[in-house]
Length: 537
View 1 (cartoon, rainbow, N blue to C red):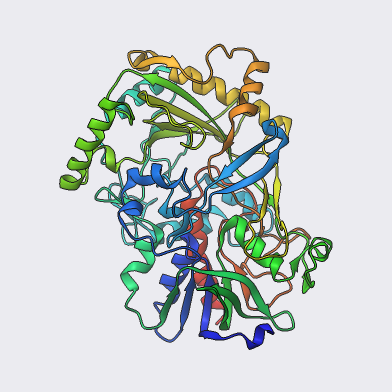
View 2: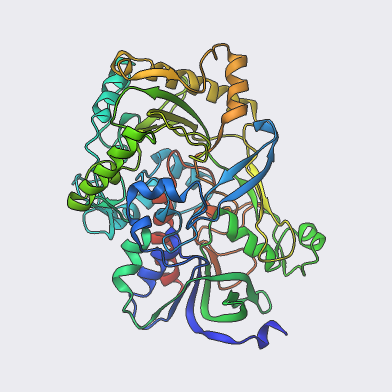
């Protein structure tokens, strides 16, 4: 059957592909205009349940593919040929429904660099108002933060005494304490703010869509996967979807907005015939528009975890005493929405320079009140703590390509981790800085055993350990890169080059990785996109 002959699920002004962090922002903001009809299409389910909304349940979703695409990468030469793991949200709210909820915007220099690359309107001064527009900060009221936005941001309610222990270790290691990584200065260590409200996860869905489910002009299609964008003479007119085993179309009067993320937005473009001609032809896909940058420039934060067995009950543990504590903590959480069950586990951390000559922090730490191994897929029953160190602006790049021409196949993901020697050397320095922090006197009463790096001392041994154990910290970007050069996919208004009425609005448009967690910047991108879309009406 010809695509045009498929049954229609309706005609809308805007069809948003992907109900994740960016897609929820678009749906909530655009549908505020009662004169426009908005469709939000999500491959996963509704997900507004106890597992998504209970912060500690992240340990159930991320390692097990619950509400989660659970992608794997191709073998990584820089990681001794290992295949990496890439959990991404498959549920309304997207990765904001399964992440560690850390609210970080990135460094001001990141956005000024975007502007210098030719992306007019994307400097820090340009994007700061959109961060503020998005945010309702429960604790900080100053020029850097918003109190009127839909996204709830606040302090953890875990009441974990290890937070102060970590801060004391930071002081002993010579690091400054930073109470606000999103304020005047990013550098330093501290306790993270999180996207929570009263001890519950506050995803992009809860912030931007859930309050508006009664809007008659907002239609939400869950368990509906988009195969491709419908094109007529290089103009997007809708999308082909699979829903309940049937192929259908959703028609778009004004625009199709791709917000499927750094892996699936490029895949959908490629399946639609938009991408490098030779790659499309190799898979028997008709070339609708030769756009070589689609799926290129994949960047992600390579991450290494130091882990320790500890002598304290204030961590997640699966031994009998720890399980009994979990049961008591569940009871407390049900009463008060406080305690360990409200924890994101990555409670503390911050931003450091791997070398004095670095102008801005190039490392990020996540201090975790649990023993983390292989994305929590390898369980340890003894009490433990961990500290991640990731490289914020790696030189290594990878790609997202098609495995085949079947829409139901997962994309071929190649992050290219640790291929550049500069990345390896910077992460070696980060390893040493993080170990030095974890060896401070404040933590000495808690440390019992180094689980993963005991006896690793020389640079060669550290490199070998990095290649054996490093992987993602879940921040892929750049595969539909915004820019003005021949490798760019979208222009600074997020319009796909060469195709009318088609934009990409998600982390895939980032020209370069930002220095920090990517969830808040993704929502900022969508907030700004709403203004760009309305200006074009």
